Length: 323
Image (cartoon, rainbow, N blue to C red; front, side):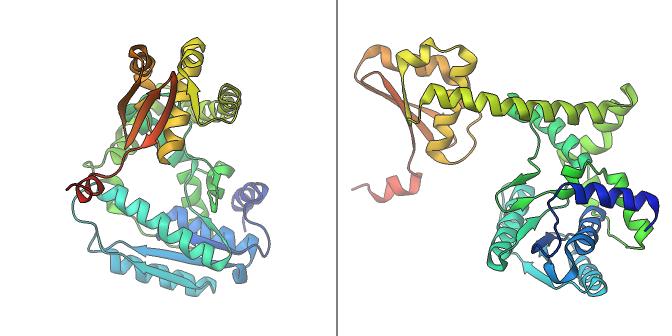
């Protein structure tokens, strides 16, 4: 391996996410990033510890050729390949469905193998994710980006700080071919426009723009740990909060408390709940019991001066109980 490739390998090794003989399942799309990750995993963990998962979403005509490319690559690296074929969901956000289905399949395969799941996201993906979320949703969380490790899932290239240009350089140096996903440049997708239009503009404004975005996210993630402790203190282990106590908190902390309680009640992100703080504080002014829908299938309930959150039953279950 040449000096540049060796340097990148050492950066991935230093993350501690790909260890010798530690079992890992690599999500393999066939693109440069996942090909680079698979090669790095084989080099660092050993081929006998590595397997790959390719998810065939059935969304594009070239999906079959992409699967075949992944098969040839895995054969060349002596890595077993698992292929999951999915049936596209009708309607809705196709990209979101594909992402969720891919991770669900990955976690299932990795858990069954007693392994961790590795995805090939890079620092370039992180920048694009942050910029897109900043445009699409308000709040500090939009700036945190993707975690490099959560549960069974890990992102070694992201933690190592490798960029998309570096993974291409890795593959070229190692003689590894990859495929280009045309949807990554399709202007109908917002993320593609961020990559093709917004990021180049920022690079033109300042050469360190991408590095500054990444550093800002890193600092905010560290600060988020402190804010989590503040919320822990405010709630003291409870799944509810007295409205008087909530009103006495600084508004920024009160919004974080509302977000925590709402999200723990339903198990999903509730970005709109904190913006309803004033409405939530007003719930208890009339006495008795009052409720307010805060979105994402969550309802706030005020009773005897105490605010709690609960998941609202699906519409279908309400209908099934009707006389």
